[in-house]
Amino acid sequence: MEILIGTNNKDKLGQFTKIFESLDNSIKLFSLEDFRIKDDVEEDSGNLLDNAKKKAKYYGEKSKTPTLADDTGLFIDALNGEPGIHSRRWLLGTEKDRYNKILERMKNIPQEKRTCRYKGVLVFYDPAEKDFWTYEQDLEGIIADRPKEGSGFGYDPIVIIKGYNKYYSEFSDKERFQISHRGLGVKKLLEYLGRK
Image (cartoon, rainbow, N blue to C red; front, side, top):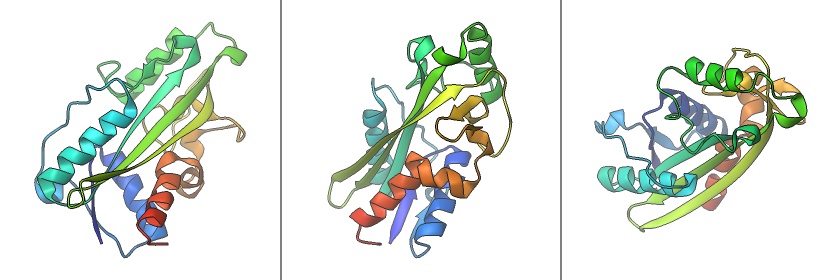
């Protein structure tokens, strides 16, 4: 089977590649680059699911290949849900600029009010059948008071995962895939496709 990973984000593409390799290496994955697709899909919906559906359908129809897309956001309670669905576009600059801005805005907020959650959505679209498969999951955390760089990306260096008491950036790939929406979602997708 062939699946296109519908993202221009190299970090996401790398994670999906590792997840599929660990679960079912008979599936041939393609990147947008493989199809010479350079388009970005405007994520203009008010929710993660619709954004992911839009990406999966657009890239699936354009490539004529079953496509997996995702959308994620970090929702911080003390910041009224910011950065939310616009996590990547919330502030111009680098990932470090974005998470340092959050730390700056939260410097006087006590530990018990630093709760947050990653919301993640996976969407698989089959252009031949014109149908969608979806998966959604939340991952609860706390915003740390200082960053810790590691193997993660995005806001991972400032998020401590509840129940594990360590930064998401400190998780190994194997640990991350056991709790992340990408790792758990791909497992469910393979079940849906009858691959496991």
